Length: 160
Image 1 (tube, rainbow, N blue to C red):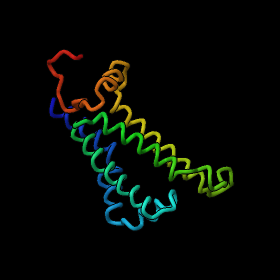
Image 2: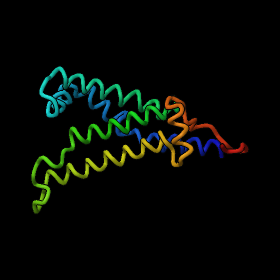
Image 3: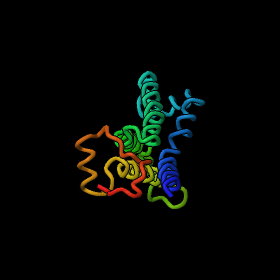
């Protein structure tokens, strides 16, 4: 039963980071110039856009690995939550196209749903960071680089 629980815990974390690792990270690597071009929609400077893509690649790979392995997973998930919010604000600006209330196809409504998905994903990462109760929030605040020990079985042990 402990093995099944560990597999479920890993699968949940994998689904949470799957967008970033491997897919988004791999897309940035394979289509680096296109990713930089997209980043230039938010910042005019090519150098700044390149820095944003490299920072994003770092976050997507290393923070996802942290969430998956349980190594400083709370902090890694917190960074990924912030990343989701920042990317929503920079690239999912549903308020800009001006066609939100238009009949038929609307670029703004498509962006709106992507914006909300980013925030929902951030919420999932915050659950990894803070847990679901006041005691687990206090644990994170006391030691944000600690692990939540996601693969430790509590079977037969008293829970904290």
